[in-house]
Image 1 (tube, rainbow, N blue to C red):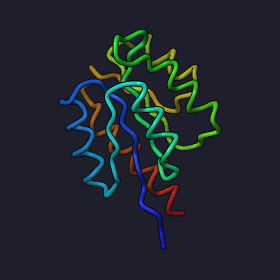
Image 2: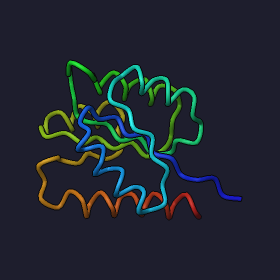
Image 3: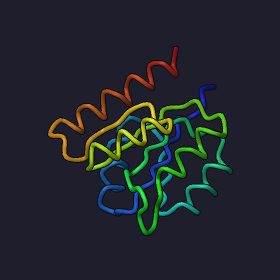
Image 4: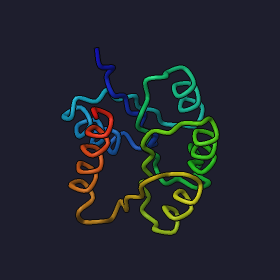
Length: 128
């Protein structure tokens, strides 16, 4: 029996969380949503089925410092798909340097088709 793919979405915006949820659920992915660092640490540490982590590009944010979370998750040996999504291209570069595999610009016009393609590629790799 195949285990269900689970994504952890770390973003402090309920609106953005809602959009990610719709895209991921449409692909049959379970979605865990968190709005701050503490919730992210708790859910990541307690759920071994997570194979996708999406990071809001908050560097030094008041609720999330995504750079710290990326480093912790990558330092844990996590080898799943990690996506950085920042409005500032410089922030995405920092998150990629810290260990994210993919960077998405929040202001990029083709962001959602690119996001969907990346998710489908990840699911195909998991299924093979």
